Length: 287
Ligand code: SF4
Ligand code: SF4
Image 1 (cartoon, rainbow, N blue to C red):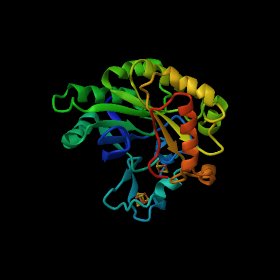
Image 2 (image 1 turned 90 degrees about the horizontal axis):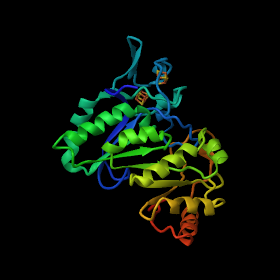
Image 3 (image 1 turned 180 degrees about the horizontal axis):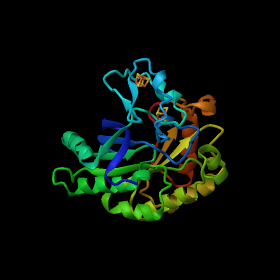
């Protein structure tokens, strides 16, 4: 892993949905889960420069330069044909940034934002870079007021969290199901390490948000409501639980036929958690 360069899928200068306040949101490329319901499946893979996407581009915006895929952003019309064709669930439109380049971008927006959220893909796969970037933010007199948050799938080891903890204000973690087998079916991996991450972050006052994604007939929160509630209650009263509603936008494959979550699904889960003394809950404003 590289501490100096990072592969970035997208940067949003102002986001109000990636943590509290107005935030610079940075989406890193590459993920170690394979969630069937992923809304950005082209952020999962790392490009191997095969060139298969080049002939699919109607604008001739792609080419190979010295064996490396090159994207001409001026010609690109953002039709997304290339990412739909990529066999590795990657994108030819990712860009590589150094810490200095990312700091320069951060500085440009610093006066207008409350903080930075690094998301993905799975941002902690590029942990050395993340540590280097957050550390530089904290040491810069004109940037140190910015809060640094990580939006993560929670698969990072405790050792990894211990390394980044001094440089961040918190992390937002998804628990995509309670049961391990259900989780493996939804994401391709066990949720044991994710539960460990959630516990460790909560014990260290670094769990900004616990996220539950309700997918009708797929997620198992209601079937395991007692165990789930005991787990959430063990994290402490201050933990914010955000319930998200599954929708099909951007989803490929079998999940594109799954039933979207409606208000009544979310209200039912919220009510069941309330009955078990969990009240610090945020639910979607629109469906
Ligand atoms: S983005 Fe995908 S199709 Fe295009 S060169 Fe990279 S791996 Fe190949
Ligand atoms: S999104 Fe991809 S396929 Fe579409 S114009 Fe841009 S580079 Fe070409």
